[in-house]
Length: 443
View 1 (tube, one colour):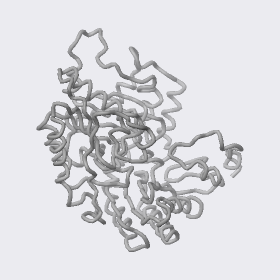
View 2 (cartoon, rainbow, N blue to C red):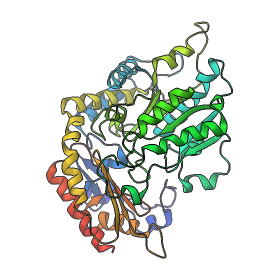
View 3 (cartoon, rainbow, N blue to C red):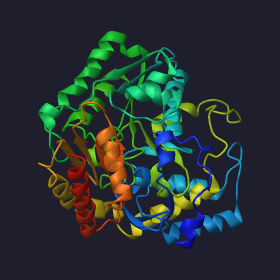
View 4 (cartoon, rainbow, N blue to C red):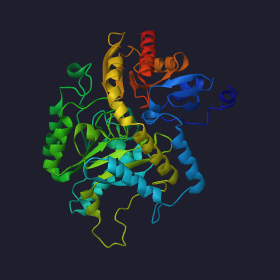
C-alpha cells in the first residue's frame, strides 16, 4: 500500500495519453502500479484480474520471472548494439526460433519495434519486391473495412477504422478496401468461425477487375480482426482469399500482431486456418509485452528476390535504430521458452471451449446484441445509448476498474476480452461473473 500511495504522480497534465479521452481520464485516473501473473495492482493497492492481457500482449502473464531475469542479464551485458552493418548473436537466434515456429517457407524475419512498424515494413517490402522483379506498376495496396493495422501512415491507409483515418487527410493514394466479413444478421452469436461469409473474399476479384492485377502489390488482412470487436473469418474465407491472390500474383499479408503467439491456440493463426500467407506481421506476444518488439516473417522466395545484386550493396533500404534490440531479443527468447515449457499454446486450445461457454452464458443480459468468442478472445456488442455512442462501453470499463476489480478493453460499445494464456478455468468464471454484474449495472 505504501508503494502504491507513493506511486501516484502529483501532475497528470503533461502526459498526452494515446487513444484516451484525456480530460475524462485525468478527472478520475485509472492508475496501475504493479502486476504479477494474472493480476494488476491499482494505485490504491487493489488487485484487478487482467481480462485483456494488457493490450492483447501479455500472453504469458505479468512479470514472469524467466523473462524478467533474461532482461536483467542482457541489460547488464549488452545494452545496445547497432542494427545497421552490425548485430549481435541473440538477434539471429530469435529469428531462427520464430522462423521455426512459422508454417511453410516463412523463413526470414525482419525486426522492428511495434505492430505499427511491422505493418509499414511489410507494405514497403511488398512494394519493393515487385519493384526488384521488374513490376514497378504494382503499387496499389488493398486493406479491409474494420481492419486495424496500427497507426503508421501505411497502416492507417490500409486500415478500415473511420476515427483512425478522418483526422489525417488523404493519407496515401492507390489504396482500396475489401468489405468487412462481419454481418450481425447472418452471424450473430457464432462460436468460432461463422458459417456465412466465405463469398466475401470474391470481392477481391471485383477490385482486380476495377484496377487490374498489374497495379496491385498486396492485400493485408487480420485473420481475426481483433481491435474492431473480435471478428473471426468465415469458414473458407481465408482460403479463397489466398487462391485469388495466387491467381493474380498479389502478395497476401496476415497481420498477426494480436493473433500471433498463442491467442488462437497456435503459434500463428495461419496454422489454425491452414493458409500460408506471403508475410506475417507480429509484435505484442513475442516478448509477452515485456519489451517493445515487432517484426515481419517473409517467405523465402520474397527474400531471395532481393539477394540478386552485388554482395556489398544494401538490398533493402529500410530499418530502425532499435531493430532487434538486445533487451527485446532476450525477452523474446525467454518468452518463447516459457510458451514451450508450459505448453501455453496448447493450453489455449484446451481452454477455448470453456471460455466460449462462459462467454455465451452472458447471452440474454440487457443490451447484449452479439457475443463472438474465438480462441481465447471474445467481442461482446452492447447496444449504444440513444444519445451517446460509446458511453455504455466506457461506463462498463470504469465500473470494472473501480468497483469490480477486473480490466478489459472497450472499443466504443463493444467489450473485448483476451486474458493471459495462463488463465485458469476458475479465473475464466470469475471474469465472466464480474462482467455479468457490470453489464447489468450499465443497462
